[in-house]
Length: 340
Image (cartoon, rainbow, N blue to C red):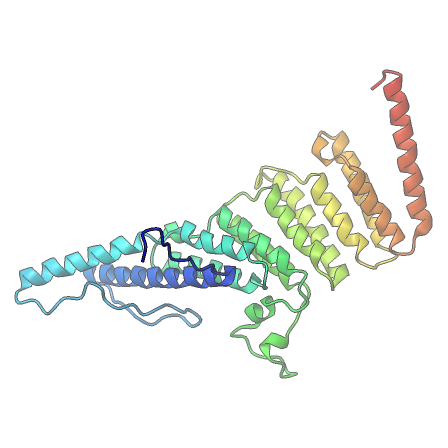
């Protein structure tokens, strides 16, 4: 071909890129297991090639296979060379390799990948334990990216997480298939399980982490009361964790506002408005107690008004609106007088 000719590059879809990346990780996993097996044999420990149920590791050919050596010296030399080369390949496997796949899942818009990211996190932790490879264990970035994927899946009516949670479990008496078991809070359950893993590993979840969990509950289309109760418990747990020094940042205005938004969608006429009003008063008290980042903003008031209006409490919504107007006018007047 002429020198100016350049072959046209194929444009892979996001899904194809993910599959390619997983194939590479499968191969790296297999090399890591081979290197680990050689180390165990060298240390005189027993080795089992049985893989756990649910793992899908690729059987790789021995790229460095050699003919049977003539003497023990040659055997020892070639065996050592083989182990070093396999170990050298296994060193390429670390948490950032898996993080690149998690990021790819988060950017792919065409499907529900919540179960896939949960399985990937399980796989990372299993390999870290079984092969004594702490470099593969999920880090804070891994968990935060996984939370982003799960939050997106919360809006899907029948999420793939139903299959994840019912896999390898006995079917219920109604003989439903695993995929038919559906709980609208599966996404929230997965998000909170990630939060629990982070705390168990002595990570300190930040404000973004908790906001991702709350955002998951806010997106759930069904099971609205349960989602509101769960979100409420998350922000109260965040307060407790900060009080006991487990996390660095207390809840701020965005966390409380998301909880109010969950309550406004709950459909509970007698509870939602009252609870949001309680949260609003709690925020104002914490603001006076030295937590300025919790001061209610316009979105907070809108969420509280919605909680009354959407649940049939129109008079309370109107009173809240008039109170906002009075506070604004009073604040404006003090500013003009130079008081503020």
